[in-house]
Image 1 (tube, one colour):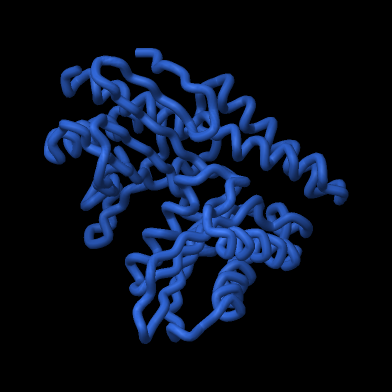
Image 2 (cartoon, rainbow, N blue to C red):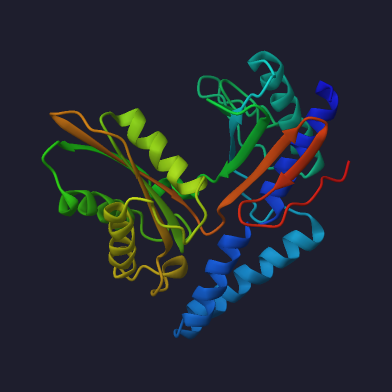
Length: 294
């Protein structure tokens, strides 16, 4: 596969990410609709599900905020230089074809690039391992950042302090992140590790899947119940506030523990591009694989 063909596949991965909600997220929304008793939130969730169907059918973005694109890349045999160029060009192409709202504004000049590229954007995370090329694309909307936060606690802090950090972030954000939200919580020795773990926990694990560590899995379930007791609800109308909570952790420092909170709105968007030899498959997490139309 040459670089031009790869770029086309990356464009298709971005299209899948922006226009097809992963099946695990749709399933969680349908469950929320079935269990909602309040007529107004129930009606809103029904409209969200209808929006998802229209976006998939017409191959249009699910939300007008098409987000900032992040790529998690396992390089296989490709070089970082050629992959970065292919990804940047694919983002420019996707911005016109799909289309994507221009969301990359230079902080110094205030100028919008118009094509979702700029200084360090799109953001690329180079992941270790993998004999084959694998690219996970994530679209992170700006509104959901209202519920994201970072706090450094003493190393002796326990479950209570961690939960308080998350609950305060969600309560302060209120309806700004377009609930029902999904939360990723990262626990680690430093701020950058905690936030990186939080984002990976949020996007790279299917909804409903609990952590392999039973204690962390219990914390996820308990924290999800507590977040939903805040009664912020769908777009602030009460009821269900979060669809799921994922926690990931690293060993902490003897004197400090960083707790990062990263949120997604109800539109949690991700897709995966896998290149195995000469065969290419694009999938969304927890959905049946489907081939790109080039």
